[in-house]
Image (cartoon, rainbow over all chains, first blue to last red):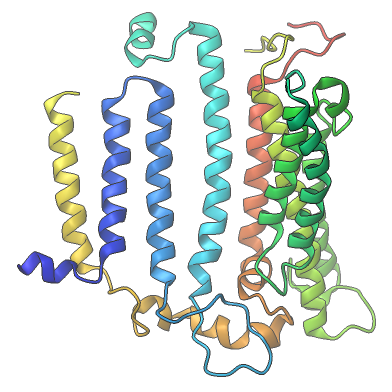
Length: 121
Length: 150
Length: 95
């Protein structure tokens, strides 16, 4: 019961933790490098969810100020800015990672971790 | 290069949609100061429209949109726009990227900030769109072999 | 997957759930996220920059140096993809 009380109102945090564990499980359990990359992307998505859920405000609106409005509750703009840049870095790193995977496949003809390790040994 | 998509419907709808997507991307970039939007988002939409052209139109047509390495070069131009705006404010007598010293006569200080933000967003949009297209072109299969540099 | 990996995953889930209970509560106007520099941005962005969209104002003005680095990162990623996968042009002799 204590745990349930502590987790009440923190649903987004719990989902973030679950996504991190899912991503790490994908990176640890899968042998295919593409599937490991997908696990890494799931972990990055979890971090984005963490920041965006922190900016949410009950009854809040988008942080765009219009003239003549007073007493409006805005979502926090700062996590949005940080995550905008984080998404761009995520796309860029995914592109470079896929390029590396294509080169690995062109040279060794496989993307399975065990086969690659056996070949370099 | 990717062959043209084997369906008249898809090719025709894409031909109609691509200009509309590009106009919407320009709206997102240039109206980004007053509504949800901005350089990164508009650049991503613009890059998606160019990639749609690559996917559906086939090599004979879509190569005319930014062939070869010109997408990557145009991305460098986008970064250059950003840097030049920063250097202009440096020459105006303030810190790097402090838009209040942009050398534009007759503009108020907060208007100078708005102009600087818009210029910077244009640079970001160009860089993001062109780099997206460049990465797609590199990843897409072609007949030409990889360079064997080590 | 070997047993040590399951052990690491279990430990990580326990650690994360323990940390969740210590994080600031969500949707609370007095949480540390909302009382810091963000309040200054919401109050002063329009006077400083004449830009109603606070996200754009922070991204391209207050944090413009960060965004400059960001754009460079994106361009560097494109350059890295080209250097890794660049195709041989017709006349070029592949060394």
